[in-house]
Length: 300
Image (cartoon, rainbow, N blue to C red; front, side):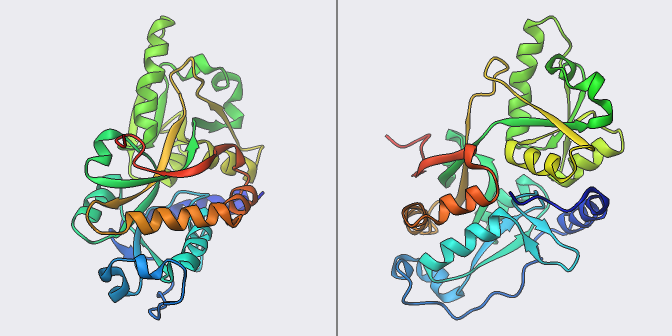
């Protein structure tokens, strides 16, 4: 399984990610190749605007293992690997453009600044009212804490009354609200949500004692903890604590014509084995789905 850099290099990497995330819509990707592969299987299905641009601009923040900005500026992770596989089907490359915060990425799509956003963000009926969503994985919310505090934080009840850093507007915020309902049923104080702009900021909050836990996706928690098991540990929210299984999706603005070809591209990489290869290589097989779906919350 791939992991992020060693913990010795993790702090500067997180700081680098924070700086990048604060520059809304600043590209950290290599310049995209503008020559389209017109013979690609799904190229003809692309909307004319994408064909003319020769690139799909996709919003992204720093969220290891999905997107990690390396010291040289290269973006690595699950997202770039997935985009490479999808590009082979669509015939145009993706360009990751960093933006600060979920709201900026969603509004940036509506304004035409971005063509898509791959989260990881859960789909909801409200979001599907404005965006088309291709679901390609699931998750459970996990809460990362410093291993040196395991004696006080490893019990699920310890999260009640604690400070939990999370990305504002993310699945973590809504999941924590459900967790707090469980806390109330147990006669315990609710956790305090500390809203921040990106995942790296939440990990830095834990490192600096501005938060006890960082709420994040299960795959991100696995990746961070695996980078140095002596530094980070995590607990996973259970069904009893209101977790359920959230469906994570790639979002595209309704009406930009990209949803159907993107769904077809996902279906193709499920069929040719690239999806399974990527999920296995990154050690997140337990978050895989049997097939991609379009707008599952609102489709009849």
